[in-house]
Each structure stands twice: as structure tokens, then as C-alpha cells.
Length: 344
Image (cartoon, rainbow, N blue to C red; front, side, top):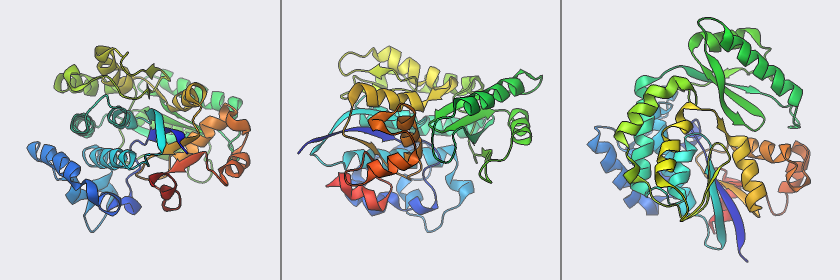
């Protein structure tokens, strides 16, 4: 029986110590594709993806770098998408932040090699510039029920800090029950100092993350557009849902506009992952949502986004967990206990 699915591609921060060796463990039969990526890395004087994935030891300092994390995540994501069982019909693709680049390849708007070129170039540019930083702060309670008042309070604080002389702070990613904030050091420090600590770990600064999806990234966007032309892009094979919740339809997309969004708005403006997931649910009504690897940290944000819209009658974490029994609504390929549900 054919099942329909929306595929969701993860962004930065998903290739960590448990994921070391992910390509070799799960995708030994796709080494030819990875070696093609290695060749592109070699042309740029960079270490091969297969070597990075096959290393004996993991270190945050090395593997959180944009020029290391981005190509590893892309390679794992694309290979996972290719491994989805034939009886599952992928009816749309979306992603979180850097995952938009992966989604373009999964959806056919970029070839595997061109997608790798985009990801590796942008990850390298982000690392070379490393403008600003990011932190994460929750805006729902532990039961995942939406809390509009709490969200509004946090955003008011962001605006207040940003309005001060010599500080920059703004929304980077609307991530389900979390807000990812980005800014310069002064803005991030002020928010951390003045907001209450939640769950003993938030606000949480993200290592080696720049101020993604803010105007601070304008130099990176400009450099990316200079290196990556519209000729890399083509018509998608599957509908693509971007970081505004807009849909790019197969055989009906303006390629110049897709390039312009990807290396313009997507780099310098907030990324609304919550809206992307809600659009996917409302417009495509899939049987399931599949989050590709690496990692399994994005599942919570997907569930929280669905809860916020009342999808499938869910209003909190307990109802989502109950919905997951039997035939799961959400499958994370980075989880060993769920991967086999969609790989056949």
C-alpha cells in the first residue's frame, strides 16, 4: 500500500558525536556519490567528506565548523532521502535553514553535485566570515502547548535589545516551540544576561554558528551570489516549501526567482520553519512526515509546529506521543528504532 510523505531536511547542528560514521554505516552502497563530493572538496583544497565521516574521533571544534558540518549533513540527508522505500510517495520537500539547500537537491531543483556545491560554498563562506552568533530559547512549556503570551514577551525583549545603541539582535528561525535568535556579541550577551534561565540550559548559545537569517549575513549572501549562478538550478521534480511557507511547484517555478530567494532572502531574513511545516500539513495532508538524518533533534520542532495548528487533533506533547503509537505520523531516519519504518 502506497503511503504519502513530506520529507524534511535538517540543518546545522545535527551531525554530532553519535553521527560520526553515519555515511559509512548507512550508505556504503552510495560511496560513488560521496566520492564525487570528495572530488569537489579536493578541488577547493578541503578534506574529503568520506575521510571526515570515517575519522576515529569527534571534536566539537572541528565538526561544528560550517565548512565541515554543512557538507556532512547534506551528504547524509541526500543519501537518506534516496533510501526511502519505493512504496512511499514523497509529495513535497522542505527543510530547516541549511536544510533548504538539501531540500532543493531532494526535490530535484539542484543535481546532487550542484547541491553539494551550493552547500559547501555557503558553509565555507559562513565559516570564513563568521559574523555574529545564535542562541536558542523556548517559547512553549514542557507539554509543548502553544503559549502566545510567552512568545510575545520574548520577541518584545528581542526588539528592546535590538533598539539599544551598539547592539544587534533579531529572530533567526521560528523553530516550533523554540526561537533561534541571532545577533552580534553585545546583543546575545544582553539577552542571556537579562532573560530567566529555562530548563537549566536556555538561553543556549550555539557553537560555531553565525547570525544566520539576519541582515548581518548580507556580505555572505553577496559572495554566494557571485560564486553560484542561476545556471546551477532547474525546475523541481517535487513541490518545495521554503522558509516563508511559499511553495515552488514542479514545471511552474521561476528559476531566477528561486536562485534569488535561495541566495538572498533565505540568507538575510528570518526563516519560518514552523510555517513551512504547517503549510506542508495543510496543503499536502501527508500520511507521514519523514525527517532525514543525520541526527534526530528536529522531530520535536516538527511535532510542536503541528500541535500549534491542531493537526490530527493534537494539542500537546502527550497527544502527539499517543498519535505516534502504531503507525507513526513522524519518522526520524536518524533514530535507529524508526529508520526501518521507511527504508524498506
